Length: 521
Ligand code: HEM
Image (cartoon, rainbow, N blue to C red):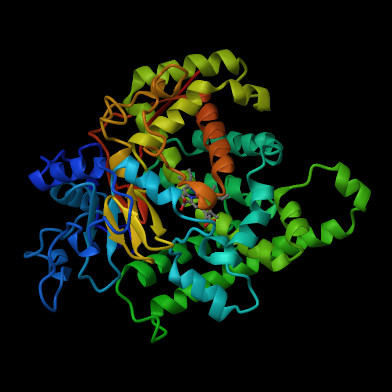
């Protein structure tokens, strides 16, 4: 059974998030937050933070049980919504078999959390991945997303110089566009006789995302978009291994599991997938190490070095390059493919916006078959606006997380060091006070003069600060490149009732994305 099926309880109807009436307590708390108490001595105690009251012994766990529990079966986004409506913009969920969660759903308070996060922002990573790096493969450096403190900072500094510099991204415009072109050819190949995308279209988008990011992380085209895929090929094996790792994260970190005490079947499967994944990543990193040895220092300085080559030169440690490559592949496949599917859905269901996008594409890219240049990319302002507006209205990651680094006043309450803070994008992104007509898909709001948002902390799809998404620039390049190519070549139609989505680690479509795809001149 796939992790998608396993999580069938997390069902949410797309764009039908109920707008609940705010309770009196919630409204009063909005006013209290406005007073902005910042001193620890005058702040109210942690115990005063509103939230569902735990019962003796069973705490709040019963609320998630079938039949009796009012929070049973909610997706994470719906849980956040429900707590916000009942208890206000700062509330907590305590009395659970896991640490308390502090929910912060107001952009001012989000701002104060991020502004006080310090130089080593804490964010819990996936335990099973951290365990793999620290305990199973002791020779490997823990990957960026699961490292902490000084260890994280040193790694991140080296990675930032490679991943966050615009000059290092520009050289990828052409190769990433080539991957997009291969995907266009593949869309023509997999289109059914009725002119539709097949029911497994999101899997195809996953292949595009892995093909794109493995070019960045491993300096190689795996060949996932070829007509037929040999099941024994590195491409197919890598795809299966990554899927196995995600199943493992869900089975070991999200579902209740005994893996920390017993090697359960799910644990063994996870370790097996990680071993395959590490082995393949190492193979390509070693190729790059060998290649670098054959290039003279002068030639190396003159050449446009790839991300992997720069990582190897900056860290002087192939193991770090392997663990970073694995992070990129784990963090950069499901995210990017989920976002691109949401953009296609928004445009297919908003034909007037799609037509406007195509006007821009026809003007900037008169020949749909040539490779897009950096200058053309820069002119695609409406493409960029559509990407942003989709990430606003349909965030694939419902919340940003931080472990509070020191005792801190948040929303007028004393919050102890170590508390897990959950900052709900799903609420701030759609709130009328930050985004007028927030439930409508209006890419124009991101164009100059469009009045994008009144608050800089209301829209943070890639997180914020020193720990923000390190792949943001690559993700945007991939998204803009594919959206430009797809809508320059095709018109997408959605001829079915509104699609259903669900949150399992992130947003997925439950309804197959069988777009009707019509060729454009
Ligand atoms: C549209 C697609 C993507 C979205 C929405 C996204 C979103 C995020 C978010 C919200 C975070 C947490 C940031 C924070 O805590 O402040 C994050 C972290 C991260 N992302 Fe992305 N991401 C995307 C694509 C990518 C890609 C393509 C890569 C790889 C090239 C990547 C690599 C990472 C890594 C390594 C981290 C951990 C950074 C750290 O802990 O220092 N992401 N991402």
